[in-house]
View 1 (cartoon, one colour):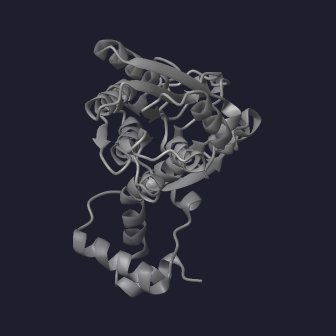
View 2 (view 1 turned 180 degrees about the vertical axis):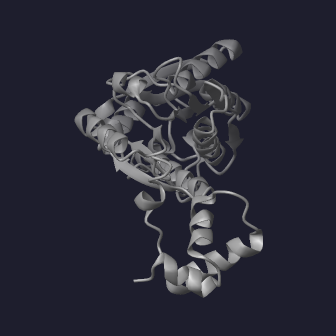
Length: 325
């Protein structure tokens, strides 16, 4: 296994200089940095994250806690968090809580004891008090848990407006919103309010159907959607609170012989990969997930540098028109 000394000899520089490059300390020319990186690549040298961080007293690692890495939205979040962490020569430590409060608490303690540089929290539990007592940078993602903890998210209310206005513009007049769970208050609840306010503004019939946390965790909505459509054949437009729900609206319509978009038009939310894999492809509201992840990583690094960061960052969403409208 290659050592720091091997890298130094390969690059033709001192061990001290290699160490300074790895720890980003002092001025090092770009030419020297490239020599070190090339030598590391040639020797397949992997820096010991814990060892390089001893002098800094924190690992160059950002902890990421998600409720389910299997959910397409959180998979996308993890992908971009790792990308932007890597650009800054940080790693991520992924913690998949499986929607369990106890496991989330265990991961929090693990991240604290391992002295990670900061945490991005994508929590759906109600037990969030412990996060307010952390002595490291914490950014919450699409969930505001306390006024003094920085939060990054999208304009969910605007998303509800855009989806409803689009359905109205396509001729829909009797609309349904299949929303998220109401068991845990979330910023995504604003999608429902954007839908209702826009229906009221245009004089539309708008009905909300809430879902349950168990359905979110299992990602199983189809039976519930079939029941809604059978009991309400009058709907000509549906705004689904996620692309996972929207994809299962398509499945339910197929079972019931409802043609999309001829008989019923459909708008999802998130713009995860599934939205462009269905037939027809789903018109959706795109969350700026990449930009949100960029903000989250940047804000943690700025916090480490004692810079002032905003407590609330809300980014605009965008309508992506495909084939379901």
